[in-house]
Length: 188
Length: 219
Image (cartoon, rainbow over all chains, first blue to last red; front, side, top):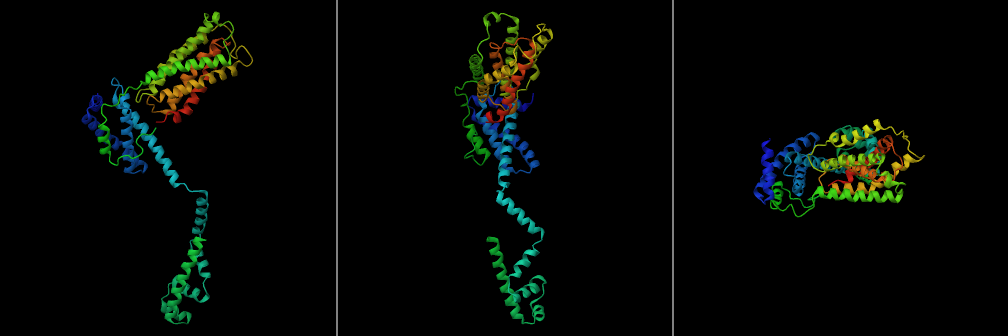
């Protein structure tokens, strides 16, 4: 016979005589082997140690609250295993439900997500071009040369026939304006 | 009934110390599962007979017929089946107990099969009347519904860990008790009729139990 069966069954009988120390020892050992099994299983499922400990505690409470129903004439380990299995599956089902509820979105969120992903496919360049089109012509050319083509302020001043300082100011202003327009679009 | 979901201590060691303090306090005069199940079966039988007598009434000439084999055959078959089903229900509410399907159901099934083979009465499979089959199946299912609820309630006193299967066995037992009650009203004799239509009705109730089990028995 499994020595663990004998030792744990003894502890469960001692519990009935009010032996707290023996019972605590059994619970600790049982929790340890339970933790090992559940953790292994959960790692395979990509769940963390936090959930593992929750389930270990849940099984301990289940065994504790039903310990009076264990028949001393019958083997203890199959009894423990069946309860652990039931509570673990129950908890996993609940975790999965919680998870899907957290992942799930409202209908509106789903539809806006598809709208957003469509414009993602157009790689955002269109969006920037649309925003720039709202700027005054002078600022449009500045932001195109400096912001998109990556020219230096001096180069841009030469190409646009203006001073370096004017480019700097125009670029700064157009950036601010772009931010404001983008903000408005996001909110509206 | 989900114990300990609220305010659970963070550390398992703390929880264990807390639980250990309750050592020796578990047997506070609760009725054992076996006793609750037995009382449930008695109540289910009474309920099933009441429904059958209400819906169909006893068949004519019952006291005389009760001494005949065609009547006793039905009762013996249902009692054998109920015994096996009760055994399965008890084990289904005991964690780790193996399910001995064959051992539990073999006596009843062999008894039914032997009687079908040896039956020389020539009673038809479709029963004595035009509506025999739907009336028989319907009455057995109706008579079994309170029994099913009682069996599921009794099982909650045990520790079922495979709820669909446990519910199926609860339905098997409840259906058999309903069929046992129906023997006093049933005008259809013949082993073939009983073997097919009684068993069909019992399986319907078992299916209901299997569907209800996961919800009704969760703990």
